Each structure stands twice: as C-alpha cells, then as structure tokens.
Image (cartoon, rainbow, N blue to C red; front, side):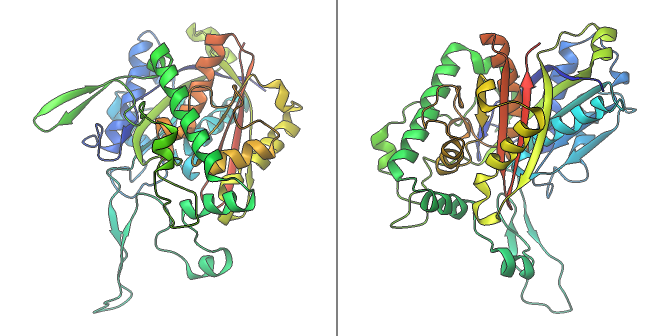
Length: 400
C-alpha cells in the first residue's frame, strides 16, 4: 500500500459570527484555500488531481448540493476534477483528509485536495414542509448549531442535549470545576496570542478579500482570539445554563466562519510532480459514545488508533484535541492521563481562542500539526475531535 503524504496546506482566517467573513458565501469561502494551493504550485498538472474531498457540517444554505464540487469549480480547477462533500459534523474536515489518505493508500488516487468549510454566520433558518393542508404547527429551525427537525424516537432513546449541556454533563460526571475550565480557556488564549506573535499562525493563513459595506477589506488574521482575556474577566461571565453550572461563553468555542484545504499525494505522485512532503498520514480511527457526553469521543478514538498503529501516547511530540469546550477537552486529557497544562497539547491554542467553524476545524488541526512538526523538527502528531451525536475521530501524522 502506498503512503499518503500531506504536501501543502492553507486556510482562511477564522472569522467571528457576523464578523469579517460574514459577507463571503460558503462556496466562495471553500474555494479560496483551494485556489491558493493552485497558485502555490503553478507547474503542477491540476488535471491530474483525482478528487476534491471537503467536509461541511451544515449543508442547508449556500453550502448545499455538494459544496465541494461548487468550490472546486469556483477555485479554477479543471471541470474534469471530481469532488465530494463528507459530513462527520465537527470532525468533517479531518474525515475528508482521512478519506483522501485511504484512497491514496488503496492505490485509487495519487493526488487529492481535502479540507473543509463552514459559514456559521450564513447558516439559514429552515422550515419543514407541512404534513397536510392548512397545517399550523410548523416550526422555524436555526441551522447554525445543534439539533433540528428532531426524530421523536431519537429524543426518546438518546435525548437531545444541546452542545452546552453535553459539556456540562462531562463537567459534572468528571468533577471538572469552573476554575479548571477557565484556566484552560485562559491558556488557550495565551498560547494563541503567542503563536500569533511568533508568526506561526500567519504561516497557515491565506488572506481573504471580504466585502465590508461598499468597501473590500483584506482579512489576514483570525478574528476570534481575545488577547485581553484575564482570569478575572473569565470568572465574571455568567454560566450559560444558569446558577450552579459552569459552562460560559469564555470557556467554550465560538460560532465561526472559515475554510481549509490540504494537498495530499502518493509516493509516486511526489516523485512525478517534484513535491516535498510535510508529513505522512499514519492512520485514522473513529469511535462512538453516548450522545449526551459526545465530548469524550476523542478518548476511545485515540485508543483505537494507538492500538491499530502500535504506537503509544508518549510517541507523539504534539497533540491537538479540538477545544469545543474547556470541560470537554479536560475530560479527554485527564482520561488519557495528560496534565491539564501539558505543553504539547494544543500548543498554539485551540478552538476556544481561534474559533470552531465546524467543517473546517479538523483540517485546521491537521495543518497546524503538520506545520508545527516541520517548524520544531518533531516526529509525530496526534489530532482528534469530538463529534455531535456522540462520536470521536483521531488521526496520526509523522514527519519524514
């Protein structure tokens, strides 16, 4: 089987809800990092690209009808290049990379662009069709995040806890107090600020020309980080679920807009096109957990991946666990035997600081890890995300 190599990667800045990228359609947003990859490799025969695979969690608005295909065409790729959209909710971008790597490993592809996109700002409201004439019980549903058009059998069998409630469930069941969560959130902001100051985040980012009224603004940096965050400011925030709970807007990820794209190649394609690899995809594994504690999903996924690859947690120089909530990431790190403040876990900050545009986040974690391996001359990185409705996904990378 051929090894799958991550060759190049880039992403847009991540915008806040209603922020700098609010005027950019999801399909246009997804096209931008793909177009950037094309511009970086002008000598590459892009007609030889076997597939574009993009993750997207919503697909209810301008990201509908196979947003990967729309983005591929809008990016300037030849129309002969096929494209497919995949959905593993929050881990969709990482799922796309894993599927690309598997196609390459099986010999069914030599060159693939994978990644993901989400415009949470532009997620529409939807209204189901009426069951009959003169129906008056229709409900307008917000597609930005969480459950909608719920199956009553699903609600009866598994519950429909909100994302915030799933994090509160973990906090309560794992004994994760508010102070620990706020400390985790502060570390995320501080580490992101440090990475931004060092220029490490800029290495990942392709600037976006976004409409702003009658003007066009050049967006070059993530909009979500709050460099002025302090422990006192975090402690002053009210819990989202009321008195006696611990999840706040400060220790949770945001609602964001963004896209990312990664170029993967087989060993033969590396040689044929003269490409230099960043990292090899070692493997990927997924696991299911109870929906009400969906945030613990990375733990069984990571354990399955370690068993499959024969590696141990100590074999990884860098670990990225998506910060959907501080309570969620702490539940995972503690279950894995890692200290709350482990320096190699989310070393450049996480989604609490940088933002979490659902379909793009997994690809962002993978490209952050790949660049960090090269920058710090480290060997291996582990990337994982929790997934709504109770799943986890993990992927391992190794520097050549």
